[in-house]
Image 1 (cartoon, helix red, strand yellow):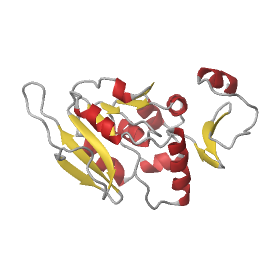
Image 2 (cartoon, rainbow, N blue to C red):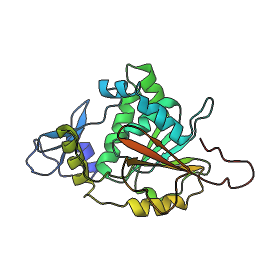
Image 3 (cartoon, helix red, strand yellow):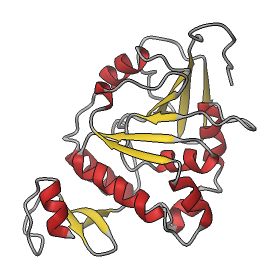
Image 4 (spheres, rainbow, N blue to C red):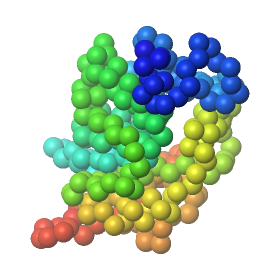
Length: 239
């Protein structure tokens, strides 16, 4: 399996890690990215993710994208990453398209969704059935009308737990620390969608020049919600 993935992603194959840079480790049933002893794996049925399903963050996230009783917006997650929030949205009932431009991360996401589809946990299988991963740059795509764009740009440096710092460093290494927040916002603001939701640190400045329709704040992050005017007729829901 490792040889096949190396060929597909145009990566150098080796039997064991012999590089100081990040490397993809692929086994028969598991895969992860590793750098200097730090590992990043994506497992939607892990105990951590199952615990997050029951957290208060879910309610805030759901409200931000507009989830209500019998209303589950389609979401375009334009910043992929580890797709933890994407999974939570799918678990809430939304159909989520996850776009990831880094080929290795895109493959890890596809592999994680495939594994979740056969998980022993029924709720995980159901959520995975509402997740679709596409590899590529979201800024080269057109979001579906009447959907919600979700942006989670890379946060600026701040105090974090050691494990989180290692994970963030690995992800920044894979993405070459490219901060494209402004261009992401410019792209999103041109899409004919119902709303744009931007996840930000509590004290970070608003992305772009527009003022959010409203903001939902948690303990460490906030969601800036930009409700768009409907394309034709009807009224837009602000919550």
